[in-house]
Structure formats: structure tokens, C-alpha cells
Image (tube, rainbow, N blue to C red; front, side, top):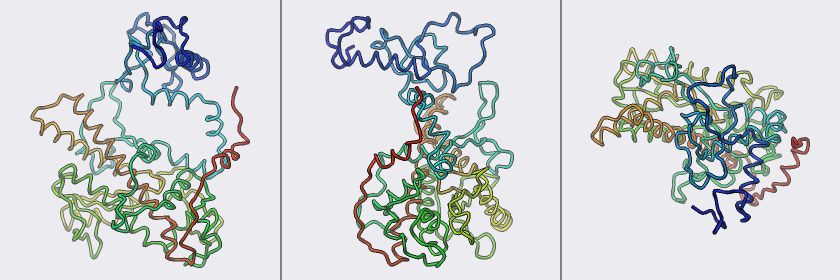
Length: 459
């Protein structure tokens, strides 16, 4: 095997390398071991017996094993890296790129300083909201507890947990188009370039949003706040004057959930949904899903904003609503939905009810995540049933994980698009007298870099 520019090189002897590409590889190998807590693989003396008295390292503190340079040309990328301790492998292998990136980010001094000392309070709060969520699969208060797929953990009987990354759901889907490109598409499906810019400023915690610049000195319809300034995004997301935008955002997430259910083979209804008591009506009816000892399931979608945006005194504008527990907002919204819908639906209609709550930062309520996992398990079962054979546990778990990954990303991207619609500059245009033709936004990376002048690299 030959690397680019390595024609005639003896890849088994790094000391003889003369190619510039191979020299760069050697320098990279040395830097990873010197500065990023990596070590060169060596055959373990006894893979089944750890060294006596050796302390057990935290997974994040454990060095990343790199193959020796003289073996790289004959190796393949490790495929089972998630399930196998790379440092205890009996043979060397190439770590996946995502594992190398994770190791570098954990050890990169400038990155660690930025995490400890964010340039603004808003960036610190947004980073807190984007931390990966982890919820128990079998929660004792979950309506889905008796319906969740039971899995025996081979690693000591640890309770199974489900994870969701608000940041990965957006950044991992950057290759997907946000709009269909069809000019005749419905208004609720359109996200303009200004909306796109506005969303990512909010997503990254950058408060001086250029997309709101035309509205800087224009009063909102509520006559209590100006549309511009640092609190514009939070106000548009919480002021009732803009509630029509919330409806379009809500329907966008609802459509994504319905498409996931339909892909899993469930029939759904979002029109003429059963009422619970009086005029109360959930958003989506999933037929013949058979959960919570009922045949059909009613789901109600809620999208909450994490920050204060329409406070009466204005002193807490832009502050986190629950700084000590970001998920308390989701728990409270879900509890309200359950209190209003579950008992009436069960008593009057003999159907189950489930809240489906998310926030504008991309966080998801545990019960909603468990519903996605339940649907993913059904998709995996149907997948192997269509192939005509019973899959063993490992294959079934893998296929279920594929569906769960896709469903989480589909819903996460739909939530991001909905947030762009909910707090979009285009929505504000209908309520304020501002010019419609805006100059195209041009981003100067050096302007933002100046905000990090208080940081310094760690030698």
C-alpha cells in the first residue's frame, strides 16, 4: 500500500522516509503523543489481567492508542471502537476520525480555556444547554416503561440509558438542505437566508445578531420592547404578539414526528383528533401503537424557549429560566400536559396520552426520547421480519441503533428549522415597519476572533 507521494518508499521503516507527506505524518504522530495524551500501541503482557495495583482511569482521561508508524499501511480503521477498549486490544488498529477529534478537543489547551472562560455569559448558558442529555430507558414514572424493549446489559447489569445531543442534531446534519428549493412551497416550510443567519447566531450564543439590525429602533407590537438589541431573539420567542410564528414552528415539529411514525408503519391522524374533555384536543393520534395498556396513543407537541424574553420588569431579560436545572422547563411543560390530558383521555376515550416537549435550544424531554426509541425498535423488528429471518441480539441492537440515530437527527433538525421559523426576522417584518430589502450578510471571522483576545494558548 502506498500513500500519496510515497512512491518507492519503504513504509515499514519510518527512518528512511523522504516524502513530504510521510514527514508530515511523522510530525503529526509525535504531536499527538506529546500534547494530546496519546500513546503508541504495544502488545499487552496479559490482556485478561490488569497490572497489579494499577489505578482505574476515567474513560476521558485514558490515553488514545495509536498504531506504530511502521504498521499503519497494513491496518484498517477500527469498526468496533465503541464497544472495545482500544488500549487492551491484542492487535493495533487505526482509531476512527471521530475518536481522534474527541481526544484532541479534550486535550487542546485553548479549547479548554474557552470552555472554562466563555467570552460572554450567553455563550456559557448556551453551551450548558447543548450538553448531551442522558435519560433512563426504564423510568419508573414513564407511561412507556412496560413497553420498552428489555435488554440485559452484559457489562454488570447497568441500567440502560438513552442519549440525545442537541448540538449534534444540528451540526451533524449540516449537509442536508434546510428548504426544498421550491418557490411554490407552503410558507411554513420556508427558511430564508436571514432566518438561517439568525438561528445560528442564537445557537452559538452571539447576541449582536445582524439579521435583526433593521429592527433595532422599532418597537414591538406589545409596546414594551424594541425589536433590536441583545434581547430581540428572546423577545420574539416569548411575546404573544408573535404567537402566529410559534404555530408554524409547532406544526413543523409535528410534521416531522408524524413522518417518523408513518415511516415505522403507524397510521396517524392530525386532523379531527379525539378530544379529551370539552374542547381540549391533542396534536397527533397514532393508531394501533399499543402502549400503556391502550391501543391508540395521543401526542401533544410543545416547543418552549429556554430564556426569559418578555419579563414585566426587563431586569431578567435574556437570562436562563432554569439555570440550575435546564431540563426543569421540559419537566414542567410535560407535567402540565399530563395533568390536562392523560386522565380525561384514559377515562373518556380509553386511549393513552404522551407529552412531546422540546426547547428552542434543542433539548428533548425524556418521555419523548423514549417514544422515539420505542418506534425505532419497532422499525428494527419489521426490518428483519421483511427479510424473513430472526436476527440475533447484536444485529437487532445495531439496526435499532441505526433507526434511533436517524429518528433523533430528523427530529433535531426539524426542531432547529422550527426555531428559525419561530424567531425569524421574516416573521417580525409583518409586525413592524421595517425595510424588507436587507443587504446580504457578510461575516468577518477576524471580527469574532477579537472576542477571544483574553485567551492564550497553553504551552
